[in-house]
Length: 179
Image (tube, rainbow, N blue to C red):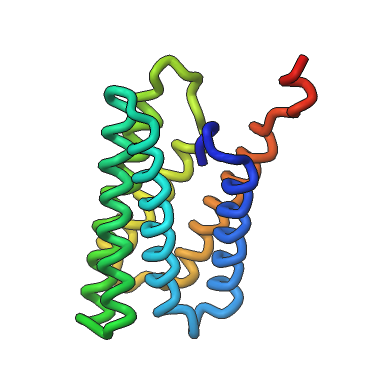
């Protein structure tokens, strides 16, 4: 969800989050394993995007934080997907690793959105999405008995709505920009 990324990429990200959230709310009993898989895939893909942007941007301060966030997403997402595909560890271990990954990734994004704006206007969309990721990780870690598919479904719906709204409202008209 960056102004430098193509608008349609953020729109797809928001629609996928919305769809996954709705699925988790509609069928929470069969979705317990899918929650971790979806979050792991999100961390991996977002980590890959941030890593590439961190390498391409090459500006002091900004590129290093993007690169570090990207690597964090790649590591946690990759470990979780490897655990799922190769049946390594338990579901509880996977959720603990997922929670730590969401807390670190969301916390870094929240820090960036609040304190490292580099003179840019405050971006509520980014702050809400990263706060939701941080909250999601804290809920998984601190409340293991919570109905995780339902809570995750609502969090993904919030993330999806914010990203879609941010994308639609923040999109600039190419005809206007040419003037």
